[in-house]
Amino acid sequence: MRYISTRGNAPILSFEQAMLSGLARDGGLYVPEQIPNLDFKSIAAMQGQSYEQIAYTVMRPFIGDTFTDNEFRGCIDRAYAGFNHAARAPLVQLDQGHFLLELFHGPTLAFKDFAMQLIGQMFQTVLARRGDRVTIVGATSGDTGSAAIEAFRGLDSVDLFILYPHGRVSEVQRRQMTTPVGTNLHALALDGDFDDCQARVKDMFNDLKFRDDIGLAGVNSINWARVLAQVVYYFSAAVALGAPLREVSFTVPTGNFGDVFAGYIAKRIGLPIDKLVVATNQNDILHRCLNGYGYYKGETIPSISPSMDIQVSSNFERALFDAYDRESNTVTGLMNELKGRGFNVSEGAMQALQEIYRSGRVSEAETTAQIAATFKESGELLCPHSAVGVKVANDQRVTKTPMVTLATAHPAKFPAAVEDATDICPSLPSSMADLYERTERLTRMPNDLAVIIKHIKENRSQ
Ligand SMILES: *Cc1c(COP(=O)(O)O)cnc(C)c1O
Image (cartoon, rainbow, N blue to C red; front, side, top):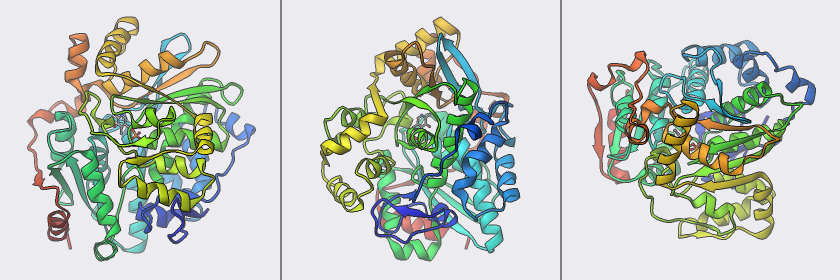
């Protein structure tokens, strides 16, 4: 299995190399040269299997010879052993034909744990074998950072620096990043928004000398290994609802487009997905784009679903790459235009995108109303991101095909929004009950590349 860059100007890599490097050296994103197919029988055989077994079947063809079969099974088993639900990603019924896929039973209570826990195990296995170490730098709008910090806690071959937008993450998210104890873990509060954090990380990856000097690696949602890990729960959910004999639709609360892109990959592998619906909050660049209005940036407006407060969705480049028939020169041109206001999508590419993705946008008031309505109708407490998904799913679902809405975080991660809507303050699971008493450790950073680079050089372990 070989991985190529969306911009066509970086070395072709193995899974191991693509995982360790994150962003391609030409600024592009790695994608598999070909998508392996699972036939009807292989998917049917997943019925009744454990999450780990399904994970192995789905991901094995993408791994190439990076791991032996046993190594890879070990990584998967260790990654999900710490989840506090036997099904890992359980389905809960909301209504006739509408199901919630609960992706918040991992250590930091959000779906990012699915990918990050596995990445931690895979990095550890590869680096231990090489006798190597890396410095990981990541940007987060909240949940990636805590998931990464949990995943790399105690892994001494990795120094981890996480940039998050100061004052723009929830208190639970912040505390999950600033309270874990480990000399290799560094939470950096940047004076800026998530797009600034993401831009500074991109700058560091594009500084090829710095990149090589410190062995820079990335675990942001641009890392192919993260997308891959997220493909698995589309299979486990669809198979539980009758696939491959029956089509299933998914609605995905979307920010950086990693999660919904994983759904597209599941479809390409052979899972019978009918509709794949992108749900955005008021930061709706994707919704506008998928409705034919071009991909144009605006201001990021803080919302009650902060993990979706972005204006540029980095994984959308992968979708564009396929929509433009993998013409890397065209994609490179579009990404250059994106340094300005944005760009128009060609008619052909637009058609290709609309064949796969639908979309909906949800206002702040509608989000709050949906949290209240779902609680009243089914007794389920939704986090605001999941509520954005449920609202869009309700608008788009049809009776014949089951709709699965991804519940991306536990309601207790966003207690203010939930309490506002329901008068109920959701409580944290017992493993996290003392989170508000733990000591915080963080460094404030100006939005200044040179200062950030200096800090990283001085504070990594070697
Ligand atoms: C990251 C995140 C999202 C957005 O997922 P993308 O893969 O970036 O589209 C949605 N909800 C929550 C709770 C998240 O943490």
